[in-house]
Image (cartoon, rainbow, N blue to C red; front, side, top):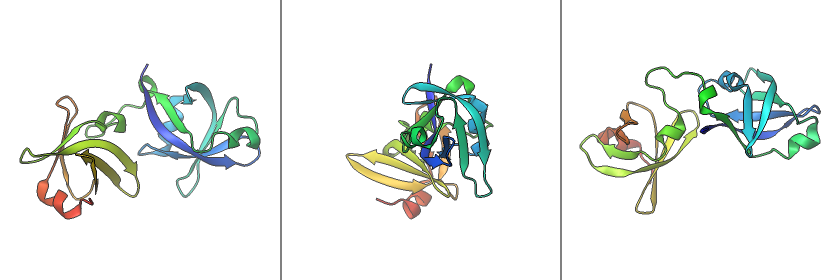
Length: 166
């Protein structure tokens, strides 16, 4: 069964084993929909989930009873089964499906391969070509088309040139 990386443990929260997490979803509450998450390949049932006023997410997992146990999870990736993932609306994609796509300009020029997407105030895409990394934010219509089936991410070359960081 395929797993998606849906978050990362930032630190323990409180004394009851709760974890503060950074979610890799558009809406932090989407993590709760998985019911069970995986850390280092081991399943953990979600017992509690909440989001504070600043958008930080906190999760309580079965098998993590206290702060000392929670400390061992700091920095670990949180995964969920693809089949448990919430349905996406048109124009939305899972990061795992975009990683590995060929990034091409709207004129057909190969710019590199998508190797990473970081979630900041906007998604930051990293592409690599000939050992060089290029980063660009997914803003202002720079991405023209995502073609998962065709294995391509098409960008507007003019906008890409204005915002890309080499």
